[in-house]
Length: 220
Image (cartoon, rainbow, N blue to C red; front, side, top):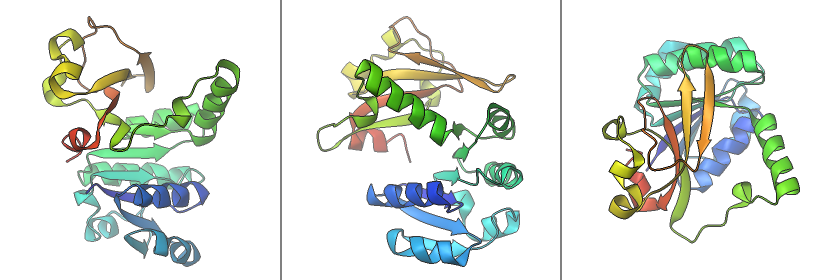
């Protein structure tokens, strides 16, 4: 089972924590506000009240053993930066942090965020695309047992072309998008429906569709 820490339980963090738990993840929800902890506690595996900007407290709660940490403190940017740094220092493989501006996104990536979430901007773009172009990405209804996931590029995929990997025929994985990060500028490039000639690079992320047991192998 995927273990995920959600750090910050405002409206965004609480929603993420509850939905992750509903989808089967083991969620640890964290906030300093006792009222927020009490509200989310029935919805997740564990909820604790402490200051996540304190590295020693994160370590004592086993944050370094989590598969994913979601830093949902978008309204307190200084705290977001500290918590992101602490999570990476503790060895969390995937840290996703909430940002409100381009400048915040750039800083979070520089301090180690593997993925930056822009909730209002991302949802606004997806809704506009759905209304104008009839796209269904946000409303994709897959058969039971299949999911869309974003994965950090497996080490043995780096340096190989999609034609060489033959992911669909060999592993039953349909790769639909590559997210390529430019570390020096803190920016990302989205490359949808890549051709077989595309060579995957270390540091890429990929959006894929596959059966859940196949995907779980990449989330351990």
